Image (tube, rainbow, N blue to C red; front, side, top):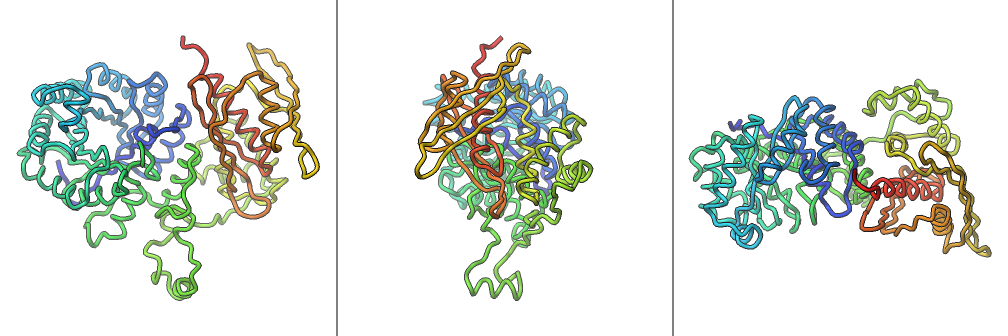
Length: 513
């Protein structure tokens, strides 16, 4: 099944990336990210673990219905009920894959699974055979493969390929591997597994030692033909292989790898920042490929060289990955048609006239304050407006008083919708600053005490009239949510983020049917 010069790109941002502590998306948010990842022309998108929760099942099902192009994949443990859940959720997909597997290292078998090698081998084979009843495309993951006995790992792979696995995944689950050793492992498997040519070898590396990309590239160099990665490298603990880094590594050094991934790299920058926004995780300025400093130069020698010839200090053309200043600047005079056209160019799907009016009103509100609206502003605006959560509480009005000789005070006026009835609540509070006062006024008005776990603020664009984006993490009764708000006024953005987060908590805390 191997194609010598073809590399399959497997994106697991919506599964392994979302598993990271503090990361959570609802179905609608997952769908928006899946649409953008689709624009990258990715081969496989792993979109969730259906058996883990009703929300994850719903997300996999929704994306299977709406996304056309890549193979839609769902994860399961080597359990029949998990595999059945995957199959049901993936039914609407035109191309689907079930990804099942089990731990194969001694430490996993003895301390986690309490199974013998014979039992593990039997469970692995039965899981693949069961999944094969539902789809031709079955991937098997040998969890913790880099700490496993190579002979046993080879036996497991041979057996699952005989059972029908079309892809075999060699995960460095704990980020334990070294590039040279991981490359040697892939070589050994190609040599020792008699039927390995009937399946695609896949690499899936974690970044605990900062080597996920290096290990993945070593695996590819030694014969792996699928690489599993996430946007911005997000994932469990220190994260996964960064998609943008491994892709640009292969492309920039195609002379070395002799492999050219067939993806739309012009979408890399926008995808990176959309995912960062959705998860509330700022892209570090020094992040390779997509960080704001990735193509910045301040040293006199570097600046002089770049001005003479970009190739003196840049090995990647920033325009190739979509790293360009917006050439279209919108203003309050742009009109609905101009706004709609630009949103379409940015990749947003068509939406109703009612939704357009809502977006346009918010656009005008920002444009009147900011004068010029850049693409980054539109992305921030759209992510707020596309929030499909039912709004129990909405902001009608707020006012803050603050200064060196004034005690920070805030007044809020909030609309509460309950069973179709609208109630207006108004309260004031004092605080340590304008944002703290506003949050205390909201808590007092709603009589709904939450814990502010995290608060971050950044400027979306540059300049004195930049759009401010506030990201908050809230918790109550063991439930945790993330939300964001944007405005030219950081207090306004803070209030919007806090209130939207509370709306999410209200939904999460509702008893299950």
